[in-house]
Structure formats: C-alpha cells, structure tokens
Image (tube, rainbow, N blue to C red; front, side, top):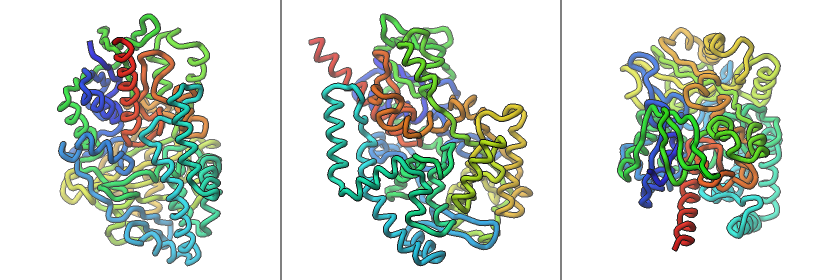
Length: 527
C-alpha cells in the first residue's frame, strides 16, 4: 500500500509527488499515457522534427518549484527569447516588445502619448501583480472553513488593505472589467492595445470585451524565465525537458511511476477515497490526489453516490472549453513577414497575429456564430531559432496556438480537423506570404484531440475556464478551494485548483502542503 496515490503524471502531479516523497511518504503515480508530462511533453510529429506537443513556452513555472526540485541540476536548461513579442500586420506596420526598454521605445514609435501611458500602465500593474503573486503558493480563504481559513481571509484583507485606495480600485477593476475596458484607459493605438490584450484571450474562449477577461490578462504576467521577471523563454529540448527533469527529481525521492496505467475508478470505502482501479487491479493508498480536470474527476472517476448529489450536480456544470486549436509545423525555411521580411531576432519572439482588439473580438463572435474564427488569433513560436535539437539542419519547427475553435463543430472534429488546419495555415500565409508553400509536415490537435490525447475535457488547456465564478475561493468550488475535495482522503492537484492554468507547478505544490498538513493532524490525533 502507498501513502499517497496520484492520478496523472502531468507537471502538477510530478510536483506534488516530489514534495510528498521528500517528506518521507511512499508515493505512486498512475499515468495513462506512455510518457510522463501530461500536456508538457516533447514528441516527434514528422520524421526528424520534434516539438512541444501542447504546452509550448516557459514563464509561469514557479521559481520555488524549480529550486526545490533542483530542475537545472536534473538537466533543464531555459534560454530567453531574444525578443519577447512581434506583432505583424498585413502591411508594413509592426510592433516589437522586449527587455532593455524595447517595449517602451516601440510603443512610443507608434504614439508618444502611448509611450508615456505605458510607464503608468507598468507602474499600476506592479502593485496588482504583487498582491496576486503573494497568493500563488497559498490556498485561498475557504468559504465555510475553520480557523485556518479565517486566518487566510484576514491575511488576504491585510494584503489588500496595505494598498492605497487607488490600488484597491484597480485590483477590483482587473477582477471585474474586460481587458478592453482596462487597456483603452491607457492606450489609443490599436496595435499597442493588441500587444497586451492578447494575454486576455490565451486559452480563454472569450472576447477582450468580455467582463472578467482582464484577470486572464493578469494571470499571464506572474512569471519569469531564467531568473528574469516577466520574461518568456524556451526549454531546450521542448516542454518535455521540464517534466523529464521533474521525473528525475521524483525518482531521486523514491516516487514510483506506472505508465500506460489509465485509472478506471477511484475506490471509495466507508466514505473515504482509499485507492484506484487500473486495468482491473486495485491500487490502495491512505490518500488519493487527482491531477485531472475536476469535471473528469467528478463525472467519470468517482463512483455514483461518492459525494452528495448537489456536489455532483454542481460539478457537472463545471465550464471547460478554451476553444484552442494547437498545431506543430515542419518548415523548409523560415517565414518572411510582410511587416519585417528579413530574418532576425523577431523570429525568436512570440509572434502574435491579431493586430487589434477588434480583430480579437471578431474572432470570438465568428466562432460563436459560424463555427470557428474566420480570421483566427494565432501565436507563432519558432523554437528552432533558439534550439537546433528540434529540426534537421536548415529546417525549422513552428508552434501555432490558435483561437477560437470551439469544442462542438458541425460535422465533428475528426471530419473537419484538416479543414481547420488548412484554414490556419492560410491565415498565417496572409501575414507571411510563402509560408504555406514551406510546410513539409504538420500535426493538428483540435479541441477534441486535446481531450482524447491529454484528458483535457472540452479541450480546455486550463482544466476549466478562468472566469470569475471559477477562480480563487471558487476553484473548483466554494468550500473546497483548499485542495481537499468533498470526499475524505481525496485531493485535487491539477490546474482546476487554485491558482489555475499554465505550467506553474503551484497547484501541485499547494496540494502537497494540504496532504502533509492533514497527515500531521492525523498523527497528533492518534498519539
């Protein structure tokens, strides 16, 4: 028997396992795929071409997790993009963003007034982000909880109360208003608004005009790469290099990982989770930690009657859909954008093909009305410009992250996957003529494919929409935001728990703390 059984060897499951095993617990992970990593994996998608299959860039991975797991010592190497972002247009206008004053200079090139506004925007964000980052590695106050939750609530009030009234108003605005409302307060130029507005729709099936989208924008600003706050980087070898390093850290602490071991059902005895059934075999443990989407956990893995009917009904309504279509493309040559034709550092950046908030709004409305975006929002990365291990000499690999392509599409995704992929390739070709002709291989993952391959219910990359009703103390539900599910012995460590999606490791870290705290209480009680 294990002390803890973890369902899923995604990055959060690995993080949770490491922290538990490092405290002397016997930990077993059951992973349904043939490889660890969940959505953070590197796989060959065309002969000689490898790339990150789903998750595709580094910034949000928590520095404490990196240090504690000694990921760099286990082989992880992160390199910075030479520029952070490049926004092309169909014409010759473009916008660059990056370190050492580049973002400020580029914004001022388009509009001196927006350049001055950027200084104010950066100052205002600093206070808001500071408060939110202080809660990344802590459980939020739990509605209906006990003394510890009351203390957490007082700490939250204290952290907000230390801000000025203007800062408190701004924090409230970011939680309630649309990204467009916020950004138009500061900036007048379309492409400048688009630079920041893109973060509001990444993995978010919404318009930047949607109330609450400003928070999703904030969520993507918490991170750092290679020790540089706010920077974006690339894991050499792809995102799988992160989870392979995590697996090595877990192995060093004695964690056992079973691959090709899909869990069929959680075992519940006398009102407590005591293990899981996999391949007809019962794996027993004193606690079970799930790294899966909450909807998958409650709808498919828990037996009928394991939780109260009102809980089961509530979780059946958990919203999971990010309308994301993910492609990897093998190229014979680098793309040449009309806006900036010659190869350069801009090709190491996140290339955002969505030059205005109106463009993003239309992409959302098209998807709602017509099945998918006529002019999709596309972010391109060319990781082979930073990492020559991914493609043959002279060739390149491209990641395309595309919005909005809903889970439900007329005719079904298996029949229309290639049609959508062609549509996306042609959309990119409008910005970089000749791109379509340089494609020599590709893989395409629709929302359906993301669900089938990675267990991302509804194709949701965040394990649940990052809306106001599914955030903080309501993630995954009021009363159970502390990683303890409404079934004794069952915990949640995936992105469906606070603080939400992205390759952060924070839910795994925090869930391990909850398991360890409960174990200490049990040991004190048994003395």
